[in-house]
Length: 323
Image (cartoon, rainbow, N blue to C red; front, side, top):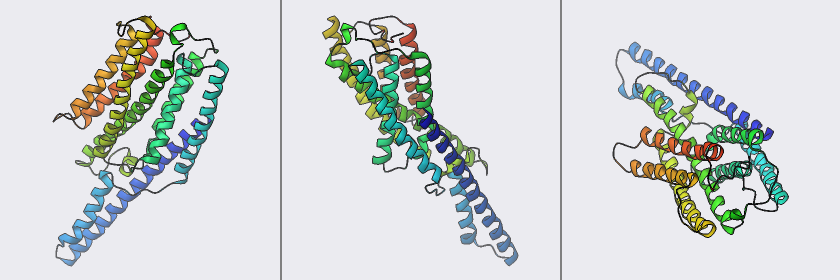
C-alpha cells in the first residue's frame, strides 16, 4: 500500500504539471492573439489569415488538444505502479500458499485479488492501447488504495478451509472471470468519470475563455474517452455474462438448481442488466455522451454495492464474507 501511495502521489503531481502546461499554452496563445490584434490595428488593415491562426491556437488550448510529453513524475508513477503490482502479486500468491487454495474465498481475499486484477488490467491497457492512458493512474491507484485499505482494516480474516460448496473447479473459473470483469469495469468507470469532466470543460470552453481543471486540456476529448470506455466495458460485459453462466452451472453442481433467487444471484443479474442497458443505450440516438457515462458509473456502483453491502448485510447461500 505504501508503494501504491507513492504512485498515487506521483500521478497526482503529474496532473498538477498538466494543469500548469495547459495554462501556459492558453496564456501564450492569448498573448499571441493580443499582439496580432495590435499589429493588425496599427497597420490599418485587417488580415483574417493572421488573426485566425492565434485564435485557432487559443481554441485548441481550450478544447483539450495541448501537447504534453512524458514528465518525470509520470515515469515515477508508472514505475511505482509496476513495483506495487509485483509486491501485490507476491502477497496474493503467498496468501494462496498459506491457505492451500486459490486466494479468493472470502471478502478479504477477493479484495486482494480483485485490486490486483484492476492494476493488471490498467498496466496491460497501457501496453496494448494506442492511446496514452497513463493519466488514469491517479484514479486507478487511488481506487486500489481505498479498496485495499478498507479490506485490510475491516475484512481481514485468517486463512480457513473452504466450505463444501466452494470445493470445486468452478471456484477458480467463476470467481477469476468475475474479478477480471470487475477490473475492466473499474477502468471503464475511471474513463467515464474523466469523460464527464472533459465534457463539462468543453461546454464551458464554448462560452468562456477560461475553465477549471485545466489539466483536462492535455487529455483526449470526451468523444475519444467515451469510445475507450465503451470498448473496455463491452469486454467486461462479455466476461460478466460468462460469470453469470458459470455461476449457474456451479449452482446446479452444488445445490441442484441453476437459479434460486439468492441475493447474490439477483445482484449479479442486476449488474448484467445495468451494463446491458448501457450498451444498448449507447447504440440509441440521444444516449451517447454524458448519459452513457452516467450509466457506466451506475453500473460500477452496483458492482461495489454487490461486493460490500450485499456481502455484509444480506444472508444467503453466497454469504462467504468470512466475517
